[in-house]
Amino acid sequence: MLDYLSVTQEQLTNVNEGESSNIFELVVDEALYKILMKLGKKEKEVIQLILGDQLKQIEIAKILNESPQNIAKTKKKALMKIRKQYEKRG
Image 1 (cartoon, one colour):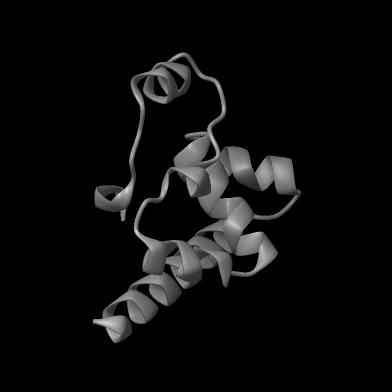
Image 2: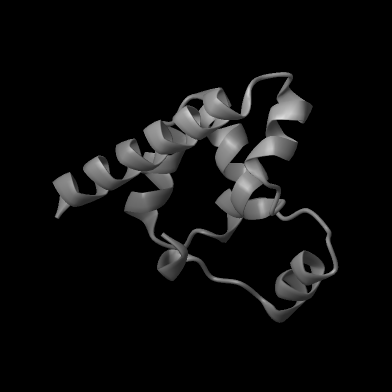
């Protein structure tokens, strides 16, 4: 998925310095962007926290007041949806 992201030097610097970056704004592949926008609210949030904010699943679990297992399931479900839809289009 990261192959389809376009990152400016400023955004890369911000991420490296620990600043949050909206991962969805970095997607340049239109088909992938549409697929991402179809994800559920919780799935988007988990993907954002993992990729954009570079948090660990245990940290996300604390933030969302859920178990790490639920975060892992949500992540897996979201990635499976993305993969399935992206492969279907081609």
